[in-house]
Every structure is written in C-alpha cells, then in structure tokens.
Length: 146
Image (cartoon, rainbow, N blue to C red; front, side, top):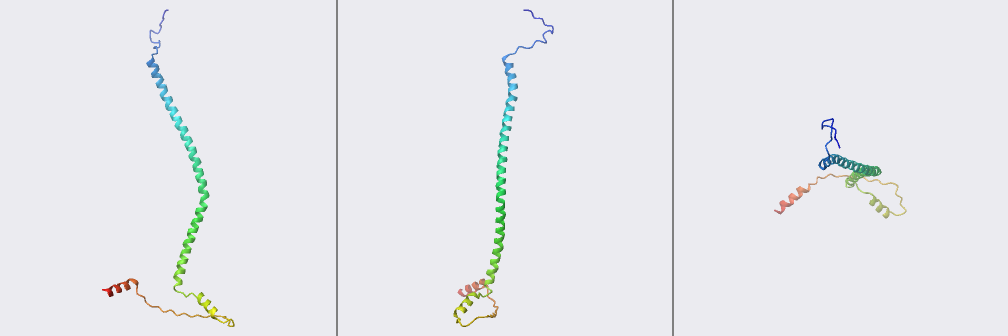
C-alpha cells in the first residue's frame, strides 16, 4: 500500500501508546472523581441542613409552647417576693403589737351568759428602755470571768 503525504509528515497523528491513553484517562478521571465527591458532599450537607431545619422548627414550637409557662413562673416569683416582704413586715409588727385574740377568747369564756359585751376599750402604754447590745453583754461577762 502506498502512502501519499501531502502535508509532509505534519498532519499524521501520532500513534497512541498505552502510556498516553493512561495519562489521558487520569486527566479526565481526576476532575470527574473530584466532581462526584463534591456533589456527594453537597447532597450530604443538603440533607443535614434539612434535618437541622426540622429540628429547629420542632425546638421553636416547644419554646413557644413553654414560653407561657416561663412567664407564669416569673410572675409567681414576683408574687413570692412580694409575699415574703409582706411576711417580713408582719413578723416585725408582731413583736410591737399585742395579740388580742387569746385575751378576747379567755374573756368571753370566763364571762357569765347573762352579761352582754357591747364594747371593749383597751389602752396600752409603751415604755422605751435601752437594751444593751449582745456584744457588750458578752464582753461584760468575759470581764467578770477574768
């Protein structure tokens, strides 16, 4: 067979060898593999984002459901503080004032049935005395023991 080369050897393609085919295959395979790995990461992240969004929505619904309870608890805490302040005031007042309920009960129990109580007038006189502080009393007791 005759070869007619009008291009004088410049137009004839080089015969492919196995090394050339391997280099071309690797050149094409690497970007394809990288693209497949990146696409799998993309799909994986998309799934993770979707699951996290559902979890956020669920948590938000639970927060909305419990926010009323939290506000109710805060209002109870405020009421508790107010009540404790009122109780402190009552406690401090109990020492300054005489409780008349037991006195009235005793008076009514000892009163004959023929007597009718229509009024009761009580007058109290307060006497202020200086009481030494406990620290000074303890100091005096220590001096007496020496």
